[in-house]
Length: 147
Image (cartoon, rainbow, N blue to C red; front, side, top):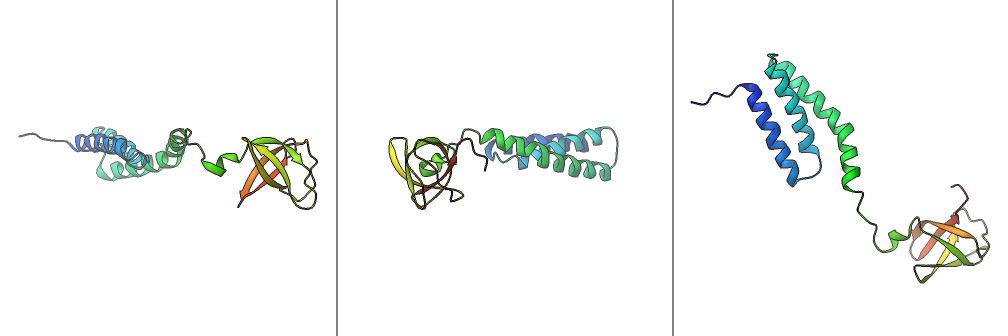
């Protein structure tokens, strides 16, 4: 009959959690898997169940709050904004002054109504950056101006 030591169970659990992580890439199962792996090492060293559970908790929390944010950032870096949200951060030259109301810019071949973020006037010909969008109006600021 096959006899499994507690550290075997921890390592097998860690491997299963890593496999689950492949199919649910949120790095929660992976974080618990890291904790289980280190709990297995503590178990193999001969320490008791209390130390194993403490190790599981500590390494799970450490990986959740340190490795997981990095993992999420790396896996989401290729997500592109779509539609109007893709305009945020783009720059263009103002083609009509923004005085008290609205001006216009050409962006990606389309004429967009815009206004300044802080309500200040901006002259035509100024390079502006799109900061936010509300409805069909772009809110812009001069490119060299800090927000």
